[in-house]
Length: 569
Image (cartoon, rainbow, N blue to C red; front, side):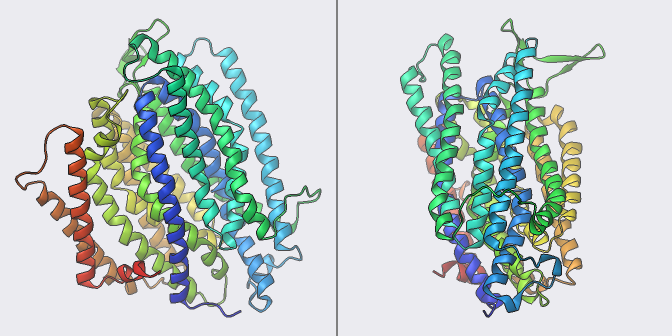
């Protein structure tokens, strides 16, 4: 089988990225609906914050085992095994990858191993949570609620991590639609349970204040149970595609094969690296939960805590975890549509070509991925900064979420938005390292990321409040992305980045023109400035239309190559 040229390979993964991006857009829109409905009925108080932190736990393991460590180690090995079977004359140059085990048996062995690990984690986790709930009578009520919700949703770890691993099998076989569509199910189930549950409970904006908390409590318990139902449905969506590519789940008594051992060897540093990044997420949520104002058992607002007989002010207002989660959703909205889509589509190709004797195709595909990422990521960063105020108010300022909460969400969103392009670039660069079986460098840089994040955000908390969390994320991701790209360029003896420097320069100019046009249009007489939903909708429409038209016209005038490629079918 003749390997495709660099240009055709780039077109191929960009085509797959469009499929992923389109379905991810539907998922993000459903997720946006979920956040709007959740904000309307749950607000950003203690109950909503408890659910947010509890749901972080299964998502942490999804990143660590499903989409993180095992997948990052499994996909390159599986892609190379499939390539060797289909084209024996172009087998990997690394002799350690040559194994008599078939790609199908390797995939089955990997699923067996993952299932065993996740079952053990779930059992241990439930025991720990049970002990915390039983012996935690003196803890704040919101912490006990967090533990209870986590215990309900913990089995979701097996479903979501297994689903992510199975999605990796489909992606290697260029079947991207089902994995990209699966998250839609979770969002739809959330919306149905939130809206239907609120209707059954009689929870609305007109519910008496004394009854709201109890109704919200019943609603989050129902939502936690619904997460498990959604997990089963998500795995079910993948099954037809898995059968089509020949995968059959079966228990293998002896799955400790050479390829599996190789996968585990590659997994350990990736797991540590993913663990560090997810530790950063948990630390941020834990810091937000621990350093926010709260209600004690007597119903009093607690604004200070005591350390060595010194009263220290809680730097964040009550509900900070939920508000930060909503801000993160907004900045992750474009990331899922283009950044994750591009990285997911490019990874199997990079993995198959990374260890060939001639790395020209690997470098060409990677350059195309970097250019495409920045072409979309830079205007997304600037654009979200410009529209965050009207967007947050239009989407979330209703029901149980008031003007002050919307203002805090918008402030954090603006800081998070500045990191969109860096996070998107990091997705591509990380996968390039994994494709070359270098899992140590991402681990080291993940440690650097969390250190920078904590060093910046913790002192700023007492000056900026919860927005300091977003500032730490902004700086740490920019540093990590640029340093890792520079190191990769040196490692492979030059990526040829000078070949795309001109295009990136044009993208920067087009982005600057877009920002200037959006700022200018806000100065035009007649621009809506009233604090109404109609005015927010008009502001959002005007800014988005101005930004999109200006950016694409500027790219067309300067002949940006990515614009032409994006028009291809």
